[in-house]
Amino acid sequence: MVLSLSKDTIQVVKEQDTVFLKNRVKETATRIKMGLVNQTKLITAASELVRNMLRYGNGGYCDIEVVSSGRNNGVRLTFVDKGPGIADIPQAMKDGFSTGRSLGLGLPGTRRLVNEFDIKSTVGEGTTVMVIKWANG
Amino acid sequence: MSLTTNNLLKEKKKNILELWMKNQLADEGLREDLISNEELRSQSEELIDALVDNLTEGIVADVNADEWSPVIEILGGIAITRARQGFSPRETGNFVFSLKEALLEVLQSETKTDADALFQESRKISRIMDSLSVVTFETFIKGREEVILRQTDEITEISTPVIRVWDGILALPIIGTLDSARTQVVMENLLQEIVETGSSIAILDISGVPAVDSLVAQHLIKTVSATRLMGAECIISGIRPEIAQTVVHLGIDLSTIITKASLASALSYAFKVMRLEVKKIPAVQKF
Amino acid sequence: MDRIPILRMGSFLLVTIQVDLYDRLALTLESDLVQMVNKTGAKGVLIDISAVSIVDSFMGRIIGNIASMSKILDAETVVVGMQPAVAITLIELGLPLKGVHTALDVEKGMALLRTMIDEDPEDDQEDIEHGPVAE
Image (tube, rainbow over all chains, first blue to last red; front, side, top):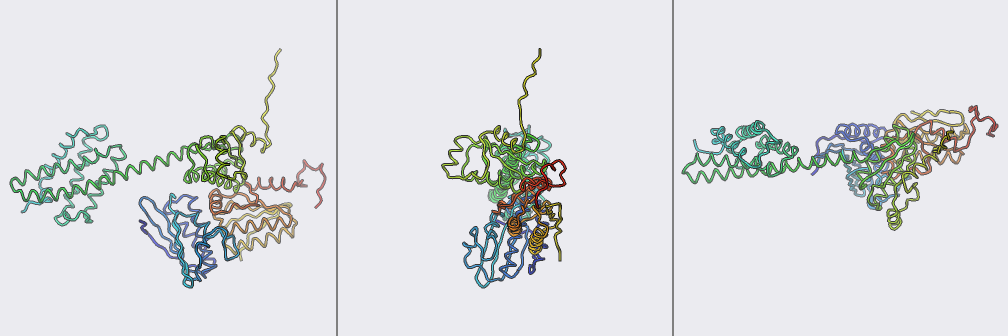
């Protein structure tokens, strides 16, 4: 069972907000004594997801939570946008797939950087992506 | 005043403690080598005090009530300490079981002939003590798990030494199975050492890795790629013939990485890259 | 608008990225750098990312772009000083930066560029007997 210990919501509407978001994620990860490599992976994942949200979802917000499960602490990020949504999630999760003009590493790459990854999307309503990185994962 | 377990505890606290201590000391499984009698007494006293302070009529019926938490905390602390000190589950369990014995004994002497009261109260005591024993075991096991996890961490730390074999050349002998957690540690140590020493060549020796399957190969390739991103080269050495066989049979492509059969040949390759030469100096003839 | 400074060192260009890049800054760097390679006829580009704590797929792509674009303009690109955590993350992300040369620090990067473009720099007094290289 995953318990949420603290929660912080950050609105993301323009590119400069991403810098603030990344700093806040870093602060949170440092607070739970996450190692440098895992921190870097988490912030990189956040960077990918926030770009997706800005580019395809017209912005949204991100919840940063400290979560705990058993003896493990971690950071959970939930990105919520009200964009067009993703029609075919399995396809979007494939390496090399991209609708935009990028490498198509965004979602599958991000999944490899975190411990838990969940994506929900409804066409016309928006997309929610949840990731968890454990401090010692 | 009706006779209830909590009243009994309050009034006969001293009695119970003495009896309990007697039971514990009489037990064959007493570990005098691990815990002194004084310490045992203070632990026992602490637990009884907590019981007396927190036991009210209401919560006796409900073993999940919040009021139990101070008692559970103390008991948990004792169980965890015992797990770390190396007590066996039986020895830890006896700590609680002997208290139950003591309680029942005192109860019996107090109720004398009132069989009904004796039954009711001993049922309550059993329920309380059973739930406390469960807590003890749960925490004990958790304590043991922590010990195991800490040892695992230690083993991973110890088993990935990075050796500076030459100025600019690092070697990292890997012994044991290479799983993803281990790869992470190996990679981190190796890359950190590369930065610290400014080494441009790293040799990953896998003579001590029992088997290379596609997952292990993938981990090796990742390590090599990460090393290259940093601007250093990574050589894999110590590939035994049977490993070469399985790698090919499994269809793993290792063509992008430099592989050498032995650490010695990896080292001489590294010397060549660094334009170094090891020469035999002819013996000086003395006449 | 913020800009990353590009320094000229002989026939090489040196870019030291001191801040965490956001996308637009990275795109500006890409175009500035390619302009600069063209203008100066530089033979090599050194990108020092030792102070960069995050390289995501976009940044990775920009670095790859700079390398490919410079290559077309006859200049080699070397990325130097990548942090271990960044390297591990890039590999996990699936971005091994193929086609980009790397070195541990600026000095080693410079040496690598020299061997790659087989240049005898005029400021290197010991090597003048080879004569000047046609520019």
